[in-house]
Length: 445
Image 1 (cartoon, rainbow, N blue to C red):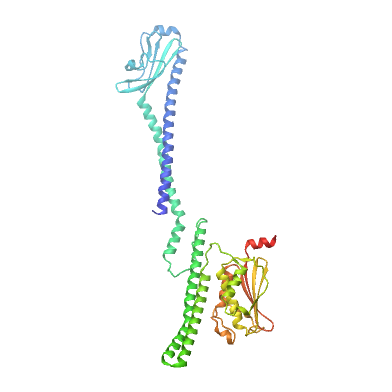
Image 2: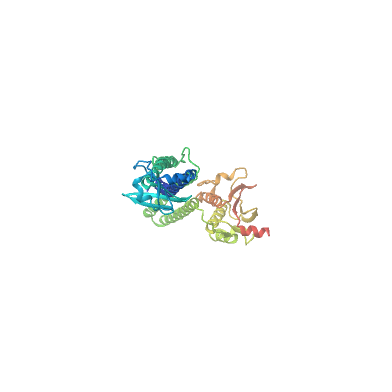
């Protein structure tokens, strides 16, 4: 069921229920008040007759020999005056003698020829005064009053229902415009959605949808970039491996064995490139809001050195073993290992590589210093983009993804990567990550 139909059914049913309940209460109250008013009219008529009779001398009643008729039989009201002995002195309608005679004091009802009469009897100055009116005329008057009240009531209800339908249609118009905008869109169109005159209640939904489209566009861009990068980087190693295997199949002896060794080295480089590509894709695609695990600095350094082929060249300076960073251990260790591998690859044999850990404000900074082949007067930021291969000799063996992965890890977890050329040659690479709140409180204490 559509939202419009659900709202219409709910509001119309609620309005009808409330209006009908109000009308039932109004009719009940109106009927009671009309009945009381007509009864008060009977009482007032009896009092009026009594007031008139009080001005008539008693000798007049002694001269009255019988009831006097003064109204036609078709009238809906009647009045009778009799003495305490039961003698009828005056009566407006002679055909109602059976109704008006011997009526009890106060209000009562009697029937004659299928017509019901309501009577009121009062004793005053030794006389019995009885007034009456026909019940069906009372009902006719009551229904006239009800009809006069019901017509505007029904018109107001119909007007309210029309106003509800118009208000809902107008209020849901932005949703309809949003639906049409989404319906006519190409699936590949991920630009933000714009709905003119969108109400305040709909703007958060549109903003959330645009944020989702933006994240989808970013994810699609990352997937396309990963596919392009993989195709670009894997084509050359695969071609080289194929060439070495074909050469080994055709050659004999030492040439065949060397070709297989070269093919194995190509496979190792291909495996390393694939691992780096998958790690970079994992980092870029992990944009969830779930809680991030923490890692101790000592564990990060130990894991990075354990996977490093030339760990003996790395000189680790003193650091706070209890310090922790807000990032997963595997990703942090992988980023640091890439920095160390890059330094080992660019630094000549025999030259040491230093690793220091410093605390700067809310961040923990891993500092890798080398004496590689990077000149002191060239900006090293050109090394950060993926597949950037700068340098000579040993530097050509990399995949060009190590620094890009480190930068992506730092950006994902609120840190950064800074490269600085060192005087005399080489690089100083700084990987900063957020420290945990526990570590910050411990240092503050």
